[in-house]
Length: 530
Image (cartoon, rainbow, N blue to C red):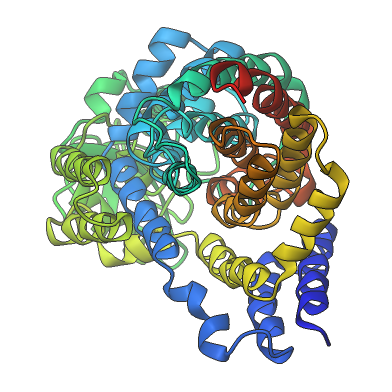
């Protein structure tokens, strides 16, 4: 089969498989490089090169950084600040979260910003009583708009800047992108706040890593156990409380316990106990005298002590934790290890902003530092990484390079040039931007811009026009990757935590893409004239 046709067939089959939802995403992602190898388009090392791609490694490392911020209570603290300022109003929360994502993206990277804010947004949504899926697609879209604030916001920006220079124009300044980025961020927040609550669906993820609400837990315990304890006294940086059930065939069955007693193994203090068969019955009504209870299978205990001791205790075969202590520990703002996590995050941001080392190196150094400083453990690292996302991105990277190497990109270029000819520059710009937006939904925006930029250079030279508006318009169109989850890594990063399906993105993404298209075609030439 002709390599060009084969490339388009593989792309088409992958898109159909993604949309159908009948085949697991990871299987489709693995099938793409295998298809490129079977058809002879790429060698086996080329087809599997995505699994060693620096971008893939960078994203994997960012999941580790995100886990560190979440596990140490940094995200809980940020979530508190957001809730304090925005309350539980969904639109106000979307604007605040979107603004944070856009600004952070402008100075580190779009992938880093979303990875850092993802657990924060989940915590904020849960605290505000909002389904997290309502906020995660808007988070990704706001970050995409924020990538247009500075030269380092996305890899596309330096690419188009270099194209402009080599085509006879000039490089764009570091903050020159903000001339179009700031209006786009404002428009994105407006669209997200007005249309987001209606167009973004409610979904339930397979697993939701949100921390439980400590206030709700404390309130439930006060009602169930008739204890008078404040939330602050239950949870601190050093100590916490866990509710456990006596397991069947536990060695604790038949033992007499009372409030104030300590456990044999971990020296945890028993705050209260109740029989499992009577939900409202407290310890003072149990058997064995006032304040005492003879334990039976299914009885419940509230125990307090150091977090590490609670972890060990709840892993005992004698008890079953109602809520794992590590989940409750995440609710403590700025808990143990928070300072180390923030220092590592700050150093990573400096490395990313200055460009001293490649992003993948900065991410891997940060992940390694978090492990060595014992902020996170290796089991945490393995659990934190979204392997579906990593496999999907790794599988799609070779398709982008095949699109260029086989000449499929040239086919698209010829079609565009044949359609535009030497007509109005606005029409040529419109066609280029539409092609960029469409291609950008299925291959990376960097690959898309690399495909379309030479076409734009040729058209600008043919029409004797400045290259600057064409390159900036391609940057805007390249950022409008809102219609599918495979359009950008950040769309993929929010897919599993939000429980989204393939077809959930275009509902809010389509009107937002039209806004970006209008800005690229109508606004950009006003700032950078033809």
